Structures are given as structure tokens and as C-alpha cells.
Image (cartoon, rainbow, N blue to C red; front, side):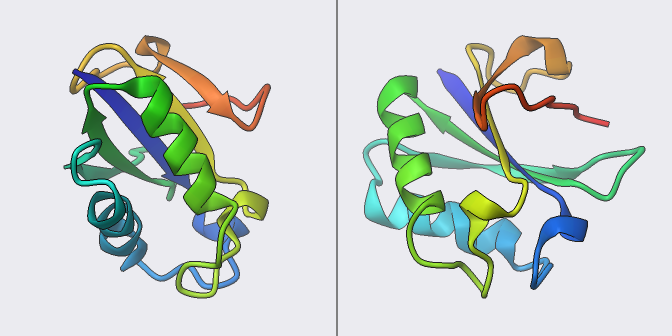
Length: 114
């Protein structure tokens, strides 16, 4: 199982509503239940960033769908593709270090679990 991590920085969001931790993964699971399973969320220990986790059996298809949602209609007033969101993928479910993830969006971004 692969894990998709979607990291949100509240300082970059027009509406940093904590409900994003439920609405964003819920939207993905609702549209593609065969592709995604919600896998919780966490806040960085050294930052206020929130990371939403999803598991999938097909990382390539899942990343494509995540990017489709991020580039789609705003979620809770947030145009996510324009708000500093980072999407990373790990081949390890519940990876506990950032080095286990590779950033897929936006290119060149730095992913951290801190």
C-alpha cells in the first residue's frame, strides 16, 4: 500500500479552516472509493502545517486524482493548487520520516513532517 500525504500551510490559505482535514480526504474517497482510504491527519511539531494522509493501491492513479481535486473548485474557500499545498507519496504506509516521501506537487517543494 502506498501513502499519499497532502500538506497544508494555514498561513498560505485564505480560509485556514481545520475542517479541511475531513473535507479534503472525504471528497477524494467519495469520488473514488476504490482508489482511496482515509488514513488520518497530523500537525507538524515544529510548524502549524497540517498533513492529511490517504492510502492507495495505485499511487500513480491516486496522485492524478489528488491533483485533479486540487486544481478544481476551491474547497472551503481555498483554491488549493495556489495555496502552497504539497503532495508527497511514500511506498511505505505510515512512514514516519520525510525521506520516505517523494514530492509530486509542486515540483521542487520541500516536504517535512515537522
